[in-house]
Every structure is written in C-alpha cells, then in structure tokens.
Length: 228
Ligand code: 5GP
Image (cartoon, rainbow, N blue to C red; front, side, top):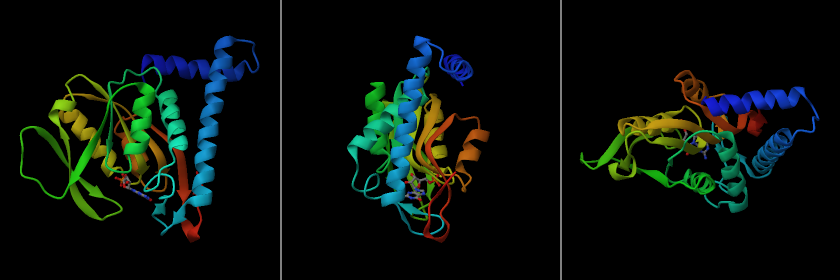
C-alpha cells in the first residue's frame, strides 16, 4: 500500500472510531464509502437476479458484463475502482479482451488515463514490437498468447490491472508479467467478481499485489450463488 493509501486507511479507522464526528473529511470519506457499498450491493443484486450458475466453478453473467453490458453499472464500477485505488499514481489501465474492456474503460475514464487491452492469440511468430505472455484460459481450457504493443507501455509507468473475473489468477498474473516485462510497475489489480473459492486472489496477494475485488463469491454449489 502506498503512503497515501495508508494515510487514507488510518483516516477511515479514525472516522469509524470517532463515529458521527462533525468533521468535513470524515463526512466526505463516509459518503465515498457509502457509494462504494451501494455499487457492491447493485452488483450483488445483478448477480443474484441475472447470474446463471453453469457449474460449481463457472458463473455466466452475459446480461450485464460478458455479452450485453450495463453501462450505468459499469460507470459505478469505474468510480469504485478509482476510490479503491485512490492515492496511487496510475498512468494506464490494462485489461484483457474482451470481457475486461467494459470495466477497464470505465475505470480509465474515471482516472483520465488510457486503457490498453491485451489481445488473445492462439499462437504467434515472435515479433520485436510486442510483449507476449502465455495465459491458460480457465473458461476455454486452452492456452493463449496475450500480447501488448511495446509502444503503449513505458518503463517506470504505474499500471492498474482490471478484469471481470478472478479464478486461478492466470489472466492477472499474465498481465502483471507483461507490465513487468515493460519495466513498468503494477499499481494494483481490480476485479469485478472474484470467486474466492478458487486460489487466484490468495496467490496474487501472496505475490505482493494490491488486489481489490468488488464482489466475492464463496461458492457456486447446487446452482446457487453464495457471497463471501
Ligand atoms: P483466471 O485467469 O483467474 O483463472 O480466470 C479469469 C479469467 O477467466 C477472466 O478473464 C474471465 O474472463 C474468465 N473467467 C474465469 N472464471 C469465470 C466465470 O466463472 N465466469 C466467466 N464469465 N468468466 C470467467
């Protein structure tokens, strides 16, 4: 966590302890936190109403995130990621095509920085002008090469990674390796829906990344979504 992030966390603790203190900073912080809670509630309601449990491992959310996209909800997602990574210097947002693009562009819009999406390709002849990493796709059960053009990421930049789902962490680790290949730094990893019963979140945190997930799912057993 950055110095500013730590200061913000301490401020949140202070505001909680001091309760209803008539402090402008605390009120602003409370408002932002309440907005964040509303976004998570909206997302949970969408998942409950429209999510289709395909198996005890896979959730389909093609009515608002993976095929049809809900721009109003995505706008709130972007605002919430901005709040969660406040105080961090962020030069670019990086995601992976195609389902990461909606939350990614809304986050980039809020932060007023460019969005890059890594392209997925089956196999590739080596080229000098791109960064390449192999990523095993959890849903498609195949390995893709993901690529980012070298001209869109510079050494020393701080890059925020955004994705729609977190399962085993393959996609997020692949994106982080691309950032590191470029000599840039991962500012954080923002995930819309984390399946907390799969190891990605734990592995990314153990690797030292700052991970924020808007909604965490504890289980998808018996066709039912249980939140963590
Ligand atoms: P990971 O790389 O963490 O194993 O899996 C994350 C990637 O796989 C995401 O980019 C997402 O597109 C896809 N994914 C993983 N689990 C699910 C799921 O339950 N539902 C959907 N729609 N996509 C998933």
